[in-house]
Image 1 (cartoon, protein in one colour):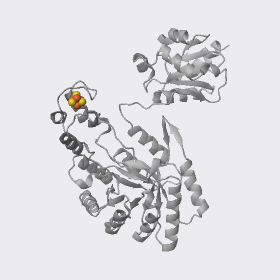
Image 2 (tube, protein in one colour; image 1 turned 135 degrees about the vertical axis):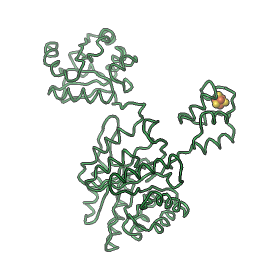
Image 3 (cartoon, protein in one colour; image 1 turned 90 degrees about the vertical axis):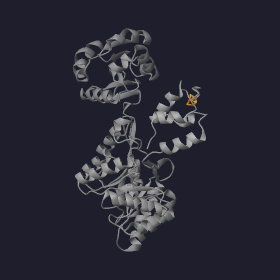
Image 4 (cartoon, helix red, strand yellow; image 1 turned 180 degrees about the vertical axis):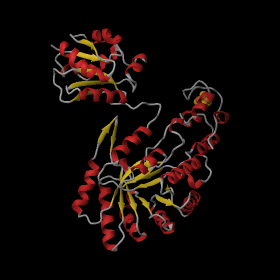
Length: 451
Ligand code: SF4
């Protein structure tokens, strides 16, 4: 169990020397208890304290890495049940299920290239396929081995971490042997006898998915896999329908956090079949760490990426856009220049309404540390000086010839300071308070002002 602040305090030197950056050992202990500091910052901590705190601070859910290098996916290491208690640590890995049976090598490579090249930028994050789950097709052994093994190799060569969705132990072994140095995830078929798969994973040193018909058996199976030498495990929860799956996911996370059984302290693996987006939603919202999506059409990816982005962010840090000058439509030097903050929600509302006007414009997004306009202004992060500095950094004067900037209607108070700070013939127009009023503003005010 984690130690309390007072328990940690009793292990510290209690000299209040401030070398850790905090005024007292008690303050530092409270930060350690909250998981916001590392013991290494106290240079005088005794070996006994390090041993005690190290064991107590190990995350209740083990971290597991699939793949190698910069594209590897690490999951687990979660410490809370609800996101708002602190934050979720590792966003779930989303793997595309890929059955290469019946494809030519060129068709196979074209699909892998397509998934590798998918990139969607949204609110400071680039959405992309995290890995490939290769289906090992049962049937004529030689053909099956060739198809799945070659696909696994081709996926690894493109940098994808690979999960092997096994149908048979010999087939899985043949595929795993070919890419073992890429640290694939071995996924036995549902209901399989795990003994052979565990021996294979232990021999190759690769992670293994463990499944069982109920949570108690699952925990026991995971412990048995550890006993035979499997280092890294993911748990496949029982539950064919949403209700029973929700129950399993909840019991596993609660059991892991409360450390009721060592076999529950592993990340969770979930298969999402074709057309089962609600299963994916349940998995992402309720603690699944790695999901395989059987979605060759691509329609479930965007909603699940977006859902993941909204849940797997630090609730204390608002979603932010990158600061910069964004083009709405195809603006030119005569187009309006709007300015707003880099709070994602603000950006999307303003850009959507501006786009809906049908008039191209420039949108200057100022770094306000992810706060909305009025909040940022009240915190001193959307002042005239700061906006002017941002516009200069964006070289706004090279984009527009009219030297007019339209500020949000909630902060008319910065107009004078901004005009002074910009100087050089710039003028400031106070825009509407609500983004929905941008269209009438362009029509009634901008049309007059830009004459
Ligand atoms: S560095 Fe260690 S001994 Fe010094 S104040 Fe911080 S916790 Fe206390």
